[in-house]
Image (cartoon, rainbow, N blue to C red; front, side):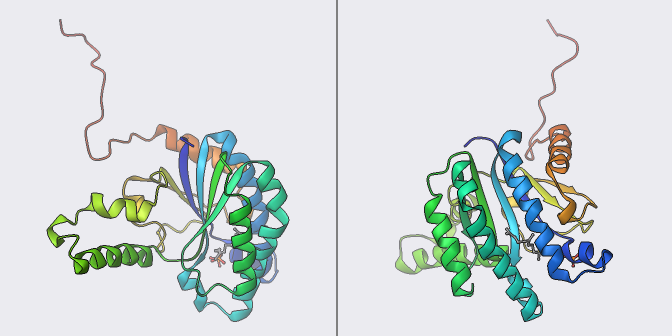
Length: 240
Ligand code: FPP
């Protein structure tokens, strides 16, 4: 898998529902259609890793009924999409904490992870009970344990040492999309976004489809990425 890694903060489900006079969960339900469409179209657009922010660790602050609906939707997604995901060679993994996910949702999710583990077309990462700061703290704790064991000196701790503990073999993030007009990261992939291109759109997540991903990717294609260095500019006049 050597294509692009795209991360998406799927925002605007509640606003979509409200504007139609529907309860908030109907926005989440409609959001699943967008997930399906983007997962189907990603491989054709050279996206080989897709990380979706499905439930942030701060989302526990929402009313229990909404939280319950979200995990129900997640479970249904894992069950209903399983055959198609397998057929399309999608490998699904979850990132984030697992100890607080309701047991039935976790069981279905882990079954899906196991069933799709050989997928090579697209790596779909579902960020669930996810907090980027928590992930960074986990990596820091891993290094602290090595220091305590005496196998690592604090002076040896540099970003390059921390990097693999956060990326865990997943390619660096190329493009981070947030829907529904908000322009913040909300604790999503803070470390990974160090050199990612950020793309914001007013489109609400339930209305986000393959054509919107195409628009984001073509904007990405126009960005100049120097990763802090200098862009190679071909001299227009040859010096002999
Ligand atoms: C943010 O919209 C969205 C979420 C907190 C949940 C995203 C979940 C889904 C799209 C469905 C389930 C996902 C999968 C992968 C099956 P919001 O509710 O904060 O919207 P608002 O800002 O308009 O209120």
